[in-house]
Image 1 (tube, rainbow, N blue to C red):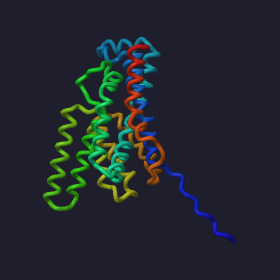
Image 2: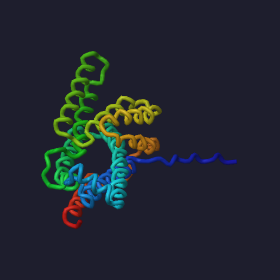
Image 3: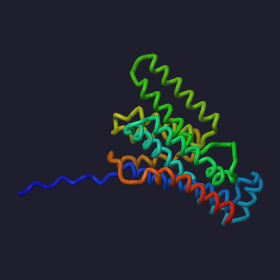
Image 4: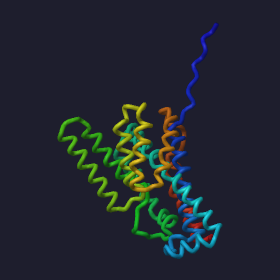
Length: 258
């Protein structure tokens, strides 16, 4: 009797994780941009006007509920992209080029993000979430460079971590603080994959301090559980352009079609 051939487990690649992350990010863009800002015009309503709208219109209440569910789904993208960032750092041949690509993406996304989420091309109240990846990447660089267990290296990592927090707060980066926290938590358990899901999910509970929508973010670790360590197939340029293009389309539809 011939031995049974060992089957390969049906896991997820980095490309598949990226697709899941973009699905969750798209949910938030549609919820906040198309529904809240486009159809409901929440960004221009006062608290009293919003209360009157919701109390008088059942359809407005339904749309608001849907938009909040979509916004909660958006938080699931944060752990996924934090994990993808770690894998990128692990496999990149040049941290400098990797940083420049992520930084360029953050710059490209800023105006479409303002249009889709804030309702205008120029808005100084917040920065798009990709800047959270930029700051997290810089912090990771120093954590990797000074990863020995000496007291001076612990001190350097602590100072860099505080600097990262300060920059994220000063720039008002959307989801920036949870992104940095989850990135570093996943980095700390990088060599212990069996604990990654549990520790990461518990870390999302701490993120509820920044936003209660993160109560939904723990679900993303169910997806990360099936990561198999493969890169997958996909266009690098396409991966980088899909987010700003989605923001741009939603922003233009919100401004000119609704």
